[in-house]
Length: 382
Picture (cartoon, rainbow, N blue to C red):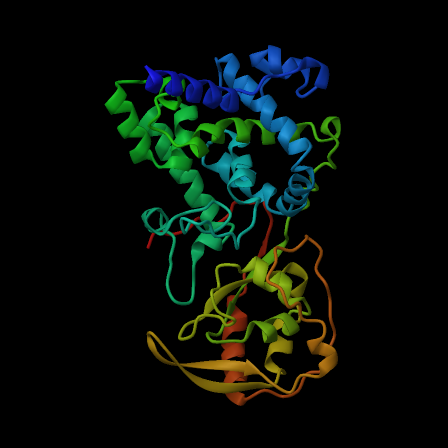
C-alpha cells in the first residue's frame, strides 16, 4: 500500500512538471495561440491536445524570461544562415517552418558538439551523417558544412515523414531516432503521437522537443510582441574557389582580405588549420574576394613543411614572416561570426614558384557568386 501511495505522489509530481499551469494574467502566450489551434505557427501540426498548448506556453515563457539573452543571441547567429535553409527546404518540398529546428538543435552553431557526439547545426551523429552522404575523415567533417548538412537534414526529415506519415512523429524521431519511436509504436501498439509521448518509452528531451520547436517558431514570427529584435536574414554572400591542398587558413584569410574568423565559419567543415592536402579543395570565400584572391595568394610568404598524419606524410604550406600588426588582427577564438566581414591589410612578399604554379592552375576553376535565391548545388552521396 505504501508503495502505491509513493508511486501516486511521484506521478502527481511528474505531471505537475510536465504540464505547468498557464496563468492568463501573466500573458504567457498570446490569446490566439493558446485558444485557436488554427493559428499555430505551422500548418503541419494540427489537432494538438490542450496539454501541448500548455507546454508551448511554458517554453514561450521560459524563452522570454530566463533564456531571453540566449534566444536573442541565437536569432543574431542564425540570420545569415536562414535564407539558405529556407531555400533548401523549399527545394526539397518541406514545410518551411521546419528550418527553425536548427535553433532548437544547436542555436545555428556549426561548431556545436553534443554529449552524445552529435555535431554541427543539424546535430548529426556519425552513422546518420554517413547514411545521408556527409563525408567525415581526418581533414573534413561535413556535418559542420551549413549547405551540405542542411541538404542532409532535409532528406532525413523527408524520409522520417515517409516512415511515419505524421510530421509530429517525424520531428520527434529527428530528436530521438526513428528506431526508438518505431519500437515505442510497436511495443505499445500505438499509432498516435500523443499516446507515444505519454507511453513512457520516449525520453523527456524528446517529449519537450515539439513544444520547444513550436515556441521558438512563435517567437521568430512575432519577435517584437515578445520583446526580441527581429532576425536580420541578410545572407552570407560567398564564392567557391578551388584552392591547392595543404594551404594555411591564415594565408587564405590574408589573401581574401578577410578575417580568419569568417574563413573558419564559412568553411566550418575543415577540422585542421589547412585545406586538405593532396587535392584541390572547393573553399567558400566572401564574394568580394574574387577579383584579388589569387594574386594575393601567389604573393604570400609560404613555407613548405612535411607533416606525418594518420594517412601518411603530407606537404603543408605554412604562412611565415608575418608582422605583429597583422597577427594582432587574427581572432583567437573559434566562434560563429556575425554576417559582417572584418577587413585587414598587409604587405605580402614573394611565394615559392611551386605555389605560384598551383595558384595559376587553380584560378581557372573559380565559381560564380552563391546566393540563397539561386539553386544550391546538392551534396553528392559518398
